[in-house]
Length: 295
Image (tube, rainbow, N blue to C red; front, side, top):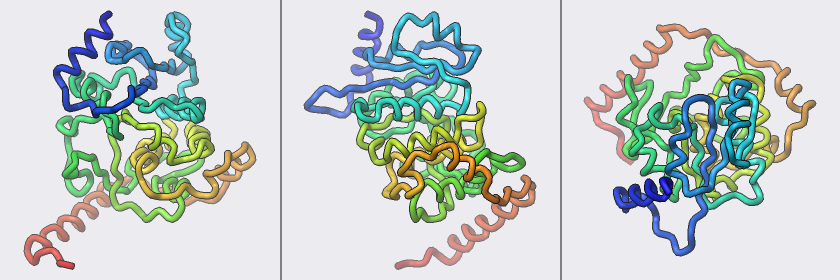
């Protein structure tokens, strides 16, 4: 079969990409489908679940000749599909879940990179650092591990409002208990990620259900940008989830959260970003001239 051919060829090409394991690993692809093809199914062993999003994909859903599918409204970007999958399967999660868009390649990475990274057995954002154009310190930087680090100023949230949260920090501080203010946010742009079961189980089912409630109101809900930028912390960070997130928020609780007083972010002004760059550039030049303090 074509699937077997592609997987065998891939394993020959990338022998070090797949972590050795005594027992067979159950790897499931959770695919968010909006438009395009399902070419990436050739890299699936036969364990997948596809979410067809929006009215435009009702026919595609009905015509897809496999029961491992669901139709969902076009809300919450690709995160809606991922969170629904976790909530549905929380008690019986596969060993590894590859959360991805059907358009992961070529939109975010090359096919070769997808083929290699999607077969890893450890937490792995499916990204290609070489494709990150326009990275400029201090707004965005690349770490020694190839991570994307974005300054935490919620630039994408200016001049708009979310239903429940208006900036990343207020969202982050709500979902986690005693999380420090993050100067930079580490995440994989695009929201395509390989996640082992134990990483998912760091958080309760109620936690994921609440995240789904936060984003399930429009296609590009502002809170979905916050969830995308929180995936590394959700699946890896030592923070405990907040008391509020340990129980499912009912409609009354969600209404109260939406109605609470909030201070909107100031509108985007070019001088704000220029001032930030000036501040960090001065610090960088100072360190170069006088050296970093030693502990």
